[in-house]
Length: 162
Image (cartoon, rainbow, N blue to C red):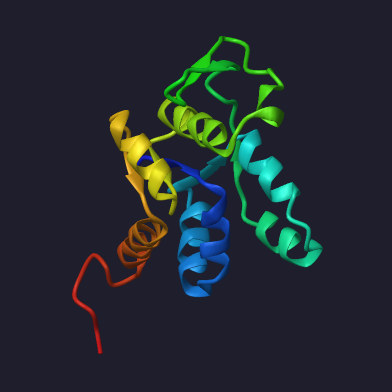
């Protein structure tokens, strides 16, 4: 088995996987096989908890994941919109921060806690790449998980028998 890949998933990835049952199944197989750990921060968890439709909220919350700590607390936001961090990861500043502040916290935590950030948010993709961090879109996560499924098939180590 390859080393487990730790992946930070942005909130919209939950919707994308929910809308793609075969893709979701491939990702869940990778999680169950120990090849993948899906991670979130309190930011994504708060966003999921705020979904007003209880059926949709519950469906999205079923995706197995580990909540990891943010890289630190937010001390403030620079005029450029970038977040200034402290070592205090328990800060409550997020409740009053902008969406971009939340995205910055997700990206920062991804860089510290995981191997790659998965998101569909173009601004977050750009900000993450600007930091030199790996970023995928949901389709790339699904493709990676499907490639793992192919490797784990009984015939993957030899010729396929008809």
